[in-house]
Structure formats: C-alpha cells, structure tokens
Amino acid sequence: MIKIPEFVKNLKPYKAGKPIDELAREKNLKRIVKLASNENPIGPSPKAVDAIKKVLGNLNRYTDPLSHDLVQAIAKKYNVQPNHIICGHGTDSLLAYIVNAFTSESDEIITSEGTFIGIYVSTRKYGRNLTTVPMKDYAFDLDAIANAISDKTKMIYLANPNNPTGTMFEKDEFEAFMERVPGNIMVILDEAYTTYADDNPNYPNGVRYDYDNMVVTRTLSKAYGLGGLRIGFAVGPDEVIESLYKVKLPFEPNLLAQYGAIAALDDDDFLEETKLLNKMSLSLLKDNFDRIGIKQVPTSANFILTIMPNEDCAEKFTEGCMNRGLILRHVKAFGIPEGVRVNSGTIEETEFAIKIMEEVYNQVCKEFEIKEVC
Ligand SMILES: Cc1ncc(COP(=O)(O)O)c(C=O)c1O
Image (tube, rainbow, N blue to C red; front, top):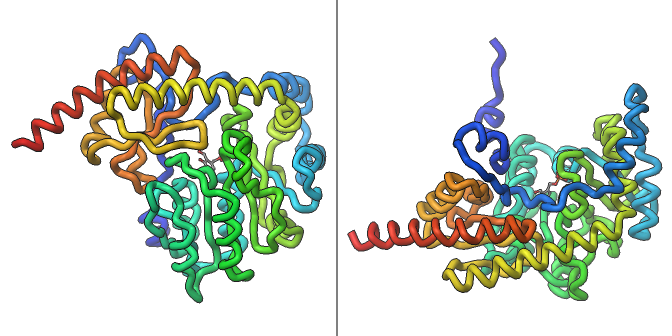
C-alpha cells in the first residue's frame, strides 16, 4: 500500500470560482452571471483568437521549449533583455517553479494574510513553512513583513495590486522595503493586475527595476482575456531565469498559448477597451455599494472586495447571490472570512449584479440583525 506523505494528506485542493455550467446544472436559472474569478468580461483578445486559429494546423508538432518568438515579443514590449524572461503555463505554474527551485523543505516563505491563494497552495504543496503577516487596512504591511524576516527566511511573496483586496503599495514604500530585504532573500513580485494600476504614476512597475533578488510575474489571464489559455511570464536576473528553465516542463507553455500571447501583447485596442469598461463597471459598483451601505476596500485592480458584517453573513450573501444566478467569491480561503469579492463585468452584467446584491444584502443583514438581538 502506498504511503501518502502527511503534508500531502493535509493539503486542501485549490477551489476556483464556481463554473457557470456547474451552477446551471445544479439550479434551474434563466440567467447566470459570473463575477468570481477576475476574468475579462469582454472575452479574449480577438487578435489572439485569430493567431490561434492560424497555428491550429501545427498541433502535430511539439512547441518551442524556449518560447523564442514570445520571449522576443515580451522583451520588445517591456524593454527587458530576452535572457531575463521565462514563459510558463500561467503565473500559477511559474510560482510553483520559483518556490520549488529556490527554497528547500522547511525554509520559511513570508507573505501577507489575505493574499493570493495560489501562493499558499504552492508553498504548502512543497512542504515549505509559510509565515503570514497581518494586513494593515486590508493592504500589504511591508514594514511588518520586513520586521518578520529571520535567519530562516528564504523568500517573500508580494502581490501588487493584491488579490483579493485590490490594494496597491506605491513606489516609495516598495523601494524602502527592498532596501531592508537582504540580498540572499528572493522577492516575488506578482503583478497579475498591473494593467489596471500602471496608469498611476506611483505604481512601482516591477519590470523597470533590476534588483538581483527579485522576480516579477505577469499573466495574460486577466486584462488580455486569456485565462483559459494558460499563459504567463516571469522577469528576473539571468541566473534565476536560467535555473527556472531547468525545472520547467519542456513544452510549456503550449503552442497555442505562445502564439495567442504574441498576438494579444500587440492588441492595444483591446487593452484600452478593457481598461475603459473596467473603470465604468467599478464606478457603478462603488457608487451603488455606497448607496446600499455595503463596505468596500478601495481598489486598483479589476475587482472590489466587499466587507460583510461577519463570516456568516459573507457566506449567506455569497450563497444568496448564487441562488439568484450571480456567482461571486467568498474569500475565506484567502484569509478574509468576512470578504466577498466581485469583479468588473459588462455594464449589463454589472447592473444585474447590483440588483441581486442589493436584494440579498438587505435580506442577509436583516437576518443577521435579528440574530444579534436574540
Ligand atoms: C495575484 C494573482 N496571481 C496569479 C494569478 C494566477 O494567474 P494565472 O492565471 O496566470 O495562473 C492570479 C489569478 O487569479 C492572481 O490573482
């Protein structure tokens, strides 16, 4: 009989936002809107779709393990040396490689409470010791993270903007933090939502720095609308990138992802449309949350974290919305049990969501108030 290691037994599988088809199978709903996974509501970049169609006939061939053409396109777009770039099957995959390649079992990795669940999964699946530092007003507390560094610390994970809170730290704060991090500790700067934040002149755009101990990760899953394709990249010092190539699966990312991504990176019109719709949808959500009385965390991403009066309320709110066809994300597993995240949608989806959230919030809170009085 095979013995399953204790740390594997204790792992909790990643739980994604509920798929639309699954909810449709379970309930008999006329309309379902999913605003639970920070996806692009417009769809995928049309240029990416065209490029993918053109390479379909080559699917009998293995793909380029070095993603040469894609690396060149990234290097040109972000003004980075090609040998500082590696592409992977989404940021999730790259995070797992980075943890695996640069830390050993029982090494300490520090991050914040209330950040991206993928880093919790990646550290625990390799049996690393994860230390989570409390947040400050639902944002990364970089001073507290620097204070938590010990002899055992090998890696620090930051997400900017952060998921699920949408908060962003600024250049000054980030640079002061990097001054405090010893050079032998690797910093991962996850910039999955950079497109929504980089118009802000105080945004510390990670690819413009050249710290010897930092790797920046980016994804095309969000603003470029390619979550289902699985494509992301990392930028870091050449010896770090060289090591990551040694642990990466050889034919990752796949052929379609490589060519879809090259075309998407060139699709400026799509990106502008995405940013504009995001602003409009978030502004509708913000104004209506204020009107309804739903607490929210100021965001620099494509979603808003709403704060419910307590965990029970957050659970009931999410479930109540789901029963009416609106899929949101209760972010208890991210470390914020009172939080429910909603991402931007089309204007129609946003209006549908506001109507349902208002109805359910009023119901759930009433119920909560009665319970409190009892
Ligand atoms: C902060 C952050 N990093 C990484 C990812 C995962 O990106 P990918 O789809 O490229 O694996 C997400 C997805 O939600 C995210 O929020």
